[in-house]
Image 1 (cartoon, one colour):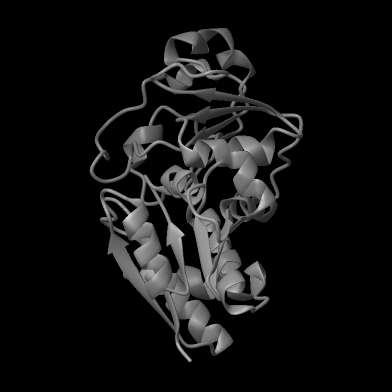
Image 2 (tube, one colour):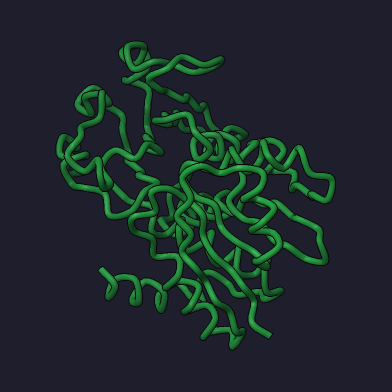
Length: 264
């Protein structure tokens, strides 16, 4: 039996997810299809249609929070503890008319720091952006770190970019959850000067294929990474949820990375 999977987002110009899940299908010998589903306006009717036609799917920008909000209008929905706290979803499983919502980005974030052997404890972390990915990073890292979220628009608990001078000297990790640096925003610059962050140890883009222009100010001793590790790790977790497999990150990472590097 073929497991019907896909990914929903907009504009979804480029995604490695179909390639990743095809690789996981081959590794596990589980038959899946994985479709790219660009959807601009996500409605309750579309949500229910997807649940009738797919066994599972991923959600990416800008619908991670939309899915959560729409799910509150359905009775046959189960939400993970992380989803209820983050209020954002990246993985949906449909099984016997029960819709299960998860957020495997949490696994992706934790796996990234483990893979890098980077001690993400007792750090001052600055998150750029305030969407679903930012909320996920805050949820994942707040227990052991001091976390700030900065955005163009002030929200409760958020900073604006004009507030950053007060804390820039304390920040050790910056996480960029905005689309800046990726198509079609590859030529746009961050609204901050990275030169002001004198204690910075790591710049982490959640996106992948990010333009090097975005971090051109970084000193040579400050590494910049993209979201490739996170992308692969969260995909493995999603695949395991859908298929009942128990594939480990280290078992699949290198093969998947080779496949997506070839796709580039």
